[in-house]
Length: 212
Image (cartoon, rainbow, N blue to C red; front, side):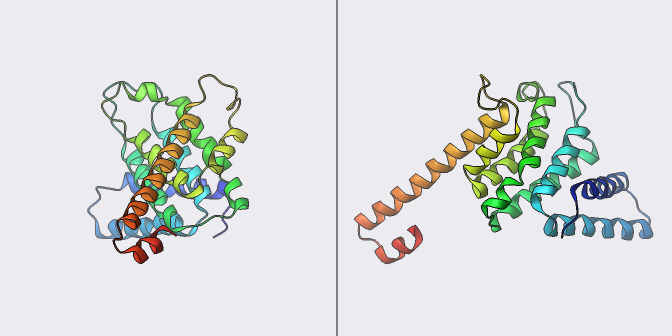
């Protein structure tokens, strides 16, 4: 569904806000209304452009976490809903494929993640007993790395100011580099395992099919 990002941001924010405000209602009519909103939200996650949804959700996550929150920070119901939606969206990426032209348009999602880490840096989360907003963002980024590969790093270089020259690199760039290295190690480990299976002569035909 081709909904522009500005409209998507307004709709998603409104739906999430109404859902979070009405989580404890008991009246049947209101429960029915909330169920309809819940279905609407998940339909957006399933059918709208994932890069736009990701950008919108990360933006909402950034705004919902109080800047300078102390060590005993706990999320609002709104933040909790945003995180659940973000994780659901990121898990759905695994079943998708993207052509090079589509990878480029992840720039706004990458920039939103960068802004999240600038306003809420990793060092701050280490001082808090609750760090799920950071973990939710990293979960989404990890799924993006698995699907989009090293092209995602090039997108980050193109949209994050001084990403290539900063020392140390921006936190988001560091995360992407670590995740890509982990992906490569996982791939090499799988290849070595299949090669060993072939050498041992155990179900060679099946091993070759899985490898290629």
